[in-house]
Each structure stands twice: as C-alpha cells, then as structure tokens.
Length: 451
Ligand SMILES: [Zn+2]
Image (cartoon, rainbow, N blue to C red; front, side, top):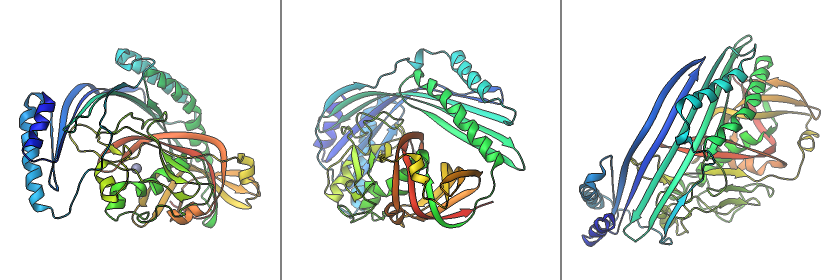
C-alpha cells in the first residue's frame, strides 16, 4: 500500500519518492556521584518522506503513520514549489534496487535486560572508579534499537534492525587545578558490549592520574606521536569531513578536484567502513544503498569520497552508502561511519626512539576543523613529553594545529598497535561513529600550551 502511494507521486510527475519508517526502543540512564537518573526510557515511531520533483526536494517527517498519504502529498507539493525556486540541476545516481531484510545481531538483547540490571552495571563501574584521587564520577549508559524500513518508488524495499550501546565515563580530580578525564565505549550489538567498559576503567583512571601530575607543555614546532584514539579523531575530523561528498560537490572541501592525487605520505591509508564492527556500522544507508568499505586514501593517494546518491550524481561518481539521518524527523546527509587509518609495521619503541624532543598525545578533549580551509586544531586529553627517545613526564593543556594535507604528508611512521574509540559526530544532526588507527608519528607539528 505504501508502494502504491509512492508510485502515485511519480505518476503525478515526481522523479523519485521514498519513505523511511523508523521505530526506536531506547534507554538512557545516568549515575552521577551515586545518584541515578532515568533520562529516557521508551519507544517512539515515525516516518520521513522525500520527494524529488524536477530539481526540487520536498522532505516531510511525521510521527503519525496513519496519515502517510497526506504526508506524501505535502512532500510532493513542497518539492514542486522548491523546483520553481531552484535553478541548479540535480539528480540521483543509479544504485542496485534491493529487497532485503537484515538484523544486526545482539548476543544479549538489551530490551530484555531490566532497568535494575542496567543500573547495577553502572554502580559496578562506579565502584571501580572510586579511587582516592577521584573527586566525582559521572557514568552514562545509552542503548538504542532502531527498526527501519526504507521503501522507494524505484522498487527498493529494505528492512533492518540496528542495535547500539554506549557507556560514557567522566571523572574529575583535583591537584593545583580541577582535571577531568573521559572515556566512551560501546558499539553495534547488545548488552554484552558493557563488558568492554570494564577494560576502559583503567584507561580513564590512568589519564586522570597523569593529568593531576602533569606539567604545562613546551611550545613550538616539534615531532608529535598521536595515539590510536587521537589518530582516529584526526582521520575523522581533519580528513574525513573534507571527504564528505556534499562538501566536495559544493566546493567546501580542501579535497575538491584532488581525486587520484597524492594527499598524504605513502604509508597512509584511510578508510571509512560501515561494514566493519564498530559504533557506526550499518548494512544499508538511509537511502537503501548497500553499505561498502570506502578506501578514501590508498597509499597516500586520494581514492574516493563518501557519497549519497545526489552528490554522487553531481560528482559523476558511484554512490557508496554515505547517506545517514539522525532519526525519522530529518533527511539523510552525507556522513561518516567507522573511520580508520590503517596500521603500519613499527613498534611504539621504534616510533619514538629517534625523537630528541617531542610530544606523545593521547585522546582528545575537543578542537576545531575547517574542511574548506583544510586546517585543524586539537586539544589532547593528556600528553607526555618525549626526550631522547623516551617518555619522561605527563603534560596537560597540550594543543596542536596545522594544515591537514601538510600534516598527512608529514606522517613518517605508523605502529602496528591499533585501537578504536567511539563518539557522536555533529553536522547539524548527530551520528554514531567509530574512529581509530595506530600510533602515528608526524615529523613536525605546531604545538601550543593553553591555560
Ligand atoms: Zn565529525
């Protein structure tokens, strides 16, 4: 019946029409200094209709699935009006028209785990974080099962279930000033993912301990080794956003026109892969395109962009499953998934042995990037001074900045040790992502201390 409604829009002159129905099952719990709070618990559902008429789009979201005919009609009218105003030509690149049903697995279904047991898990993590140097703890749990159905006027019909779970740990301590360390763990899967949070308890405690002892950093140009988490954040923020097809097509990326050119040192390969195990995994994107691995940089050469159907059309490339929407209220945008810089063959010791004076920077506590200018600025969560090939002392308030492409060219060593981190990428909408890589040595970066 939905298919008939979509076809009727095409009969009236639309080029294309699709609907994405979503049902959400979600729990968000906080445990802050021993005080539990249920932030969200429940279900909701709705749908987003998209209509392309000429060069104009109409997008209408609704939480009332009984009025889909009216919703499609409104989107059709909106597309028609937008076509009148829009001079620029647009279209959709072809994709395989698929009818498939995929359920991403949960070993332990979190829907069947009661709120008491989830809270018990948070209390257990809190107990392990209670150390004499920890002043306050804030632990956040979030699980979300999304059941989606995507139906298009071209005949595609995708049904998928994607379960995701994440735990955040935020701890603070005090020496001369208050310091904070954070860590997030999780992925695509069920309640079994909470087990991984226990491994990260030590990591976050170590970071806070280092921060409490840390000194202010030197500044100037020097070699910097990024740990796998920071390498992941760099790959996502500084490079990945610039590889998003919408930014490339609209001229807002420093990578525009550089396909096939050398953009990084030969040892650098960066992929964005929704099919690997991660927090940003999915079998199909929100246009119903089958997800595949995007090798964005291959041995230093710019090889691909992340593309939805419209931007693939604009750039005359193949769509590769790059369209993601936060929920049924919004249209899909070009987004990353699991962004990884591939490991190399060096040990950590080999990586730092020739550094006279440099920085080992771990994880991040924010920063800024400009995909158009190709510039970045990151704050390391914690860092260490390297002197004469050895780690000597912890540093705090370390920030560094530079030009993304120049920095990618300055990568001179990559370790074989890999790790990943998870987070939410903001681009007007939130998207769950993983990013990661190995320890990466950049021969020269501008390091600055900040207060
Ligand atoms: Zn991002």
